[in-house]
Length: 177
Image 1: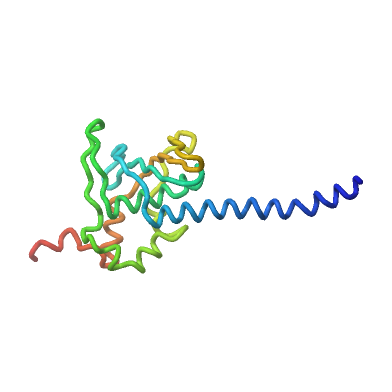
Image 2: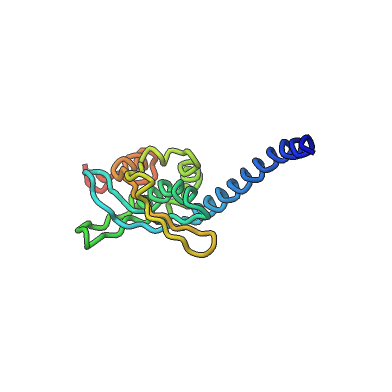
């Protein structure tokens, strides 16, 4: 009997590990779907130094870790295409979107798909500033979380990178030479 239980246990361990990995992949896919739809909220948090901004990004996901993982990508996307709303309580002015052309995301779709891939170049322009223990976590529904993460985004570096790619016009392009 002991031998039978041992064989049964050994045979079930790989199956259980595979099932747990499948559930994690399913949660990751849901988080990627939320990110593909750019389902997030931004708010100005503070201005650490010239050329960057601290934003609190609220990301949504099926669990806390996947929502937290998407926060950096969402913050960069928000700074690029939506801008950062002002925060009168903290005396922070609104920042306009880095991308000046409203249709740029569609026009340069191939570039932005590569830019926002998991592990893509967007990571060079943003860092999480507060440890995960200080994130704000709200649960809504049975299996949904809203996680607030503070991210520093290199605003000027993003603008310069897009100018070099020809996606944004240079700030000096409007002046006559």
